[in-house]
Image (cartoon, rainbow, N blue to C red; front, side, top):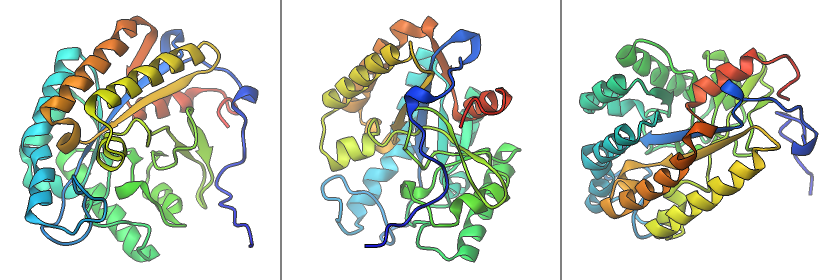
Length: 295
């Protein structure tokens, strides 16, 4: 077969890269990335709690709606209790129907990240003009409700077309979360200049782990703890980003929330050695490093 190449970034071995620090000389950045999503009723795409290919029904729509109505508020309270900042990947339609969510995010001072208009559609199957329109509409909606445009983007279903990076750069974005190729940020090529990729986990992610692979809440807890402990060791050699990806309709279920609470309490035993931060703060820090430090 003919091998295709993306030409977005070159190969880079972790052991050969320049070493740098996060603020205050810390070596492990901690990011909690929460997904706040909106779905079309009985049409389009959407997760199901039993089968990955299940049709859209009132049952799975309501299960997902639990996240915005209940699970998210449990999660907000937990993050407040533990004193952890977060970022929120937001479908723009949420902002029209759930204004209380806007107020709570503003009160917490959390970061808002572009996440399309709805998770009932994917952007990788759109033509370029349709994708550009979708990105612009999602961006404008966040700017309208929060007073500023988002700096980062995560595509619905973590997918991109061949021109997504180009369109995001042209729309004013400074980083993306869609390329889980690394535990460090790295620069990607676009037709209008470089765009930063920031780590976003598809392993420590409650959706693939607990919905599609059917891990229990306790197993997810163990995954977080083991992943954190090992990354903390590795960060003695390398500056790293530890990321947990959450969905309130999944992790907001109380039995799963209890497991997340225990995992985060374990992480925070090392609070003084950690940079509790958001993707935009990571992007800003990287932009201030000498050229060539991050490849």
